[in-house]
Length: 426
Image (cartoon, rainbow, N blue to C red):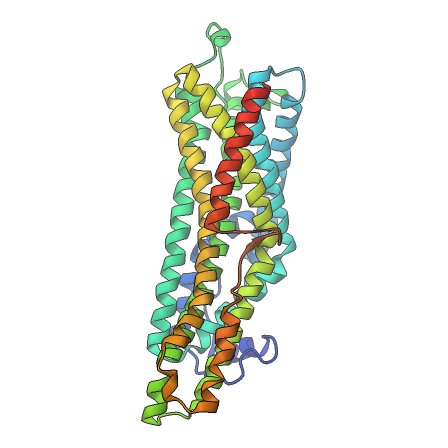
């Protein structure tokens, strides 16, 4: 990513934003904005580069990066499509028995929902690019050092959530891809034949796994496919965490301005009318950005919610089967994989709750200040902020279900209900 943004480019970036979104807000460029923008986009840059999506959401990339992105994009779709075709042929044919079919439904569903999320990442690239432009502009025009510290603090929270998501997903997924095939117990009917351990069944349709070079290639291909799927999941989570952390930072700046409003009026440092105008403009800008986040992520969150619920059901079923088989390695792997999916959907619900709470906090903070010391008519202007805070922004799954802690519990209960239904039916 190019980091050589000049002050003129910063102002041009602000000029490209929606009309009225930067009026009455201080536009002094932040001298640290180059490093700040690079730091906040760090995880998303590396994850989306692997998927070949980065040039779509961040236009200031070199020609070499765009060429490599096209190659990565084609390679990722090729391996995902190959994986989906081979596993589908094996799962829904007479080549597999019922236990193998149930074992492969989880990976098959995961690759299908990963491809859907990949598709929506590409379809929504213009919305993601617009959010990144607004984010970059906010870092460019932050004036006061205390406000920059607020933004840095919230950005660090977003980085922390991203790190947890990456660690859990990769540890659980790589354990399933590499550890379990080699260390778990082999089925009894395979003890007297040479078996090449594979995490995903069905690759023997196209590859002769008895040949060692072919087996190594197929095994590495499976691992690479797993990395692509993990990157899709973690990139979506990191995007959501980054955007929501930035929105929370902007709202915290609004709260800071509101707390200092009465002090500014008493000291006559700035006129109250100018101060309330700046606060209102900043608040509206933060709410618009939050609404853009919800609009950008709604389809992806719907796929994430439905896919995670179904896959958790299948993981729970596999965990119970391995518990009956007393396979400790497989039990540990499926348990860690289950925790990874639980944590992933928890992250989405947590950041949605965090955004909703921050939007509501503006109204509570506005009421708590010494508004009674302000002029009677001008104090009424604060009622607008209080009223707006009564309807906080919520991240939804396709505008059908709001992501919240209550619905997080419903996801867990639904997956258990589906698992009991599946165990009864089979």
